[in-house]
Length: 164
Image (cartoon, rainbow, N blue to C red; front, side, top):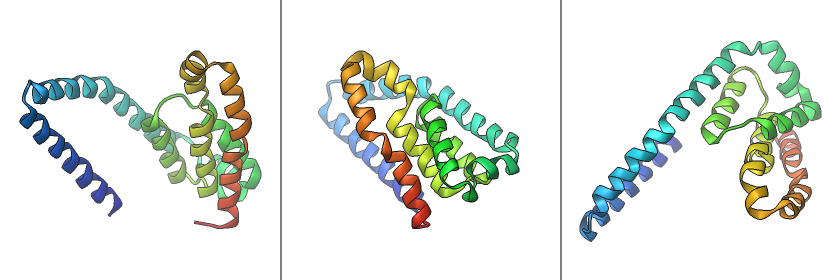
């Protein structure tokens, strides 16, 4: 149901923006379509590869290995492992959420996947070194990492205490 609501909101807001662009004139609608096609051409191959890679991960990961490292019974070790995996996985949300979904299908526990996703959101080594350090500086990044370091572990452990 949530997916349906999100899809309707996304299409509806896009339609409203399209109508506003047509009313504005000045080539805004055509310019918007041109930008959309360019962006779709940029993201579509990455989306396809991310979804395919997640499918391969789901099929290639032995369920017993997934259970041992990231299963419900892996506890704090699984949460730490998932947090580290989230930090080092390159790519954007398409890749990371697809991998998280595939891991759930392969037997990973909810607390561990929450730690994985939060680890990616907080630490993402790729984002940190490609964007944050060059733009904001090492001093800022150091402070952000120190202050936010407990968050993925806390999220995972809170999910252990209060199963979702």
